[in-house]
Amino acid sequence: MKVVVNGRPLIALSLIDRLQLLPRLFDEIFIPPTVYREVAIQGGDRPGREAILTRTGAIVQAPAGTSSIEPLLLGLDAGEFEVILLSRELQGDWVLIDERLGRRVALSLGLPVKGSLGLLLAAVGADLMTRQEARESVSELLKNGIRLSSQLIRMFESELERL
Image 1: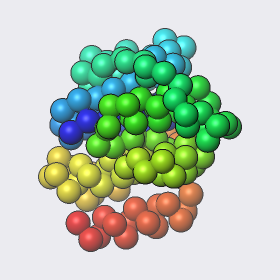
Image 2 (image 1 turned 90 degrees about the vertical axis):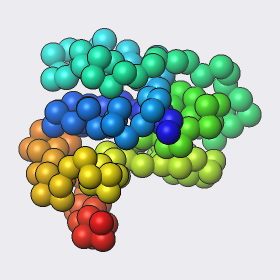
Image 3 (image 1 turned 120 degrees about the horizontal axis):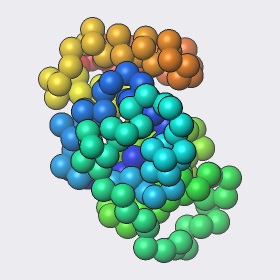
Image 4 (image 1 turned 45 degrees about the vertical axis):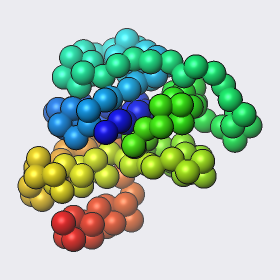
């Protein structure tokens, strides 16, 4: 399976020491150059920034072009723009993106979208972590300043119970 990952999920996973889930769930992990620069190079002293490539085996790859979907992407930051373009070009199995606008645009283009919490659910479904570990991971995200709406957390809990 192939995934293209945006910055916020990388940051979230590194904050809770769960970057290793990416290579355990996906055969190929792609990060656009803009996202890599934002997270790994300009990330300052953010925990886990050096581990993004070493612990995930991610490939930094730029999209080949801007394509005809460019007008739809107005309002996205450069990283989200590249993630969506690259995922379309590579025909990725997942686009891992947390930002609401980026998710909406990706979904409108027919891309399969998951976020950080969706990745945790997939890890539980693949027996890579327990339900309790997933709940603890969400608590750690909140403690580390990652904003999650109460509605999103309720949806996560509901999906978690179905697994």
